[in-house]
Length: 68
Image (cartoon, rainbow, N blue to C red; front, side):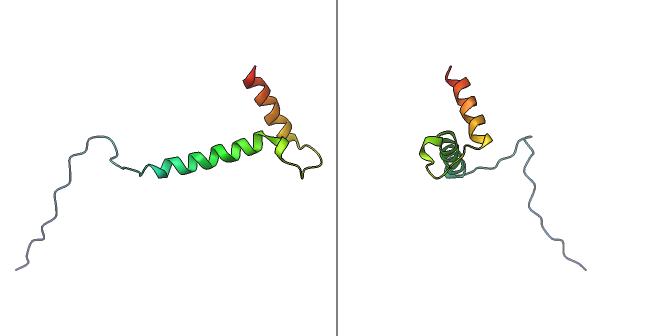
């Protein structure tokens, strides 16, 4: 005679995921992205570059359009 195994009942589905992230899981990547973006958008601090690449000119143009 085999014994039945008891499985825990599944919770009722509410239609949404119940995943909770710690505050730093979103804050740290956001901070890193903003830091790198400000470094890219501020080419005056880059003294080692001899010629301005096209990406820097593109970001300067976007920055000028935003500040208008």
